[in-house]
Length: 75
Image 1 (cartoon, rainbow, N blue to C red):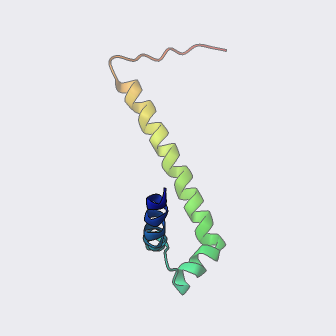
Image 2 (image 1 turned 120 degrees about the horizontal axis):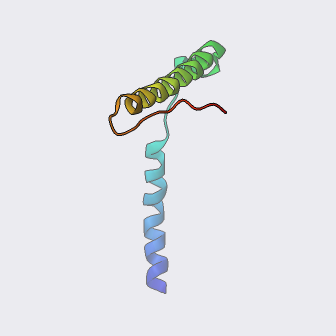
Image 3 (image 1 turned 120 degrees about the vertical axis):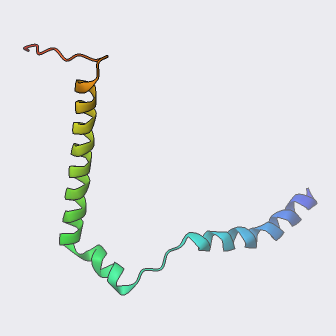
């Protein structure tokens, strides 16, 4: 039990040091870009367009596939 305490005491500083590696430093330009509403809007719009493009590519893949057939049925 004492050995575990000693190991924990020895390993704790290394764990705390390793956590700092993943912290990112923001520059003034990055902070300004984060606060800019136009950039946020552009990012959201690009993300929506990208997902719509992926969906349309998937639909065209299944439409052009010889193993899948789409039937037009009414509601």
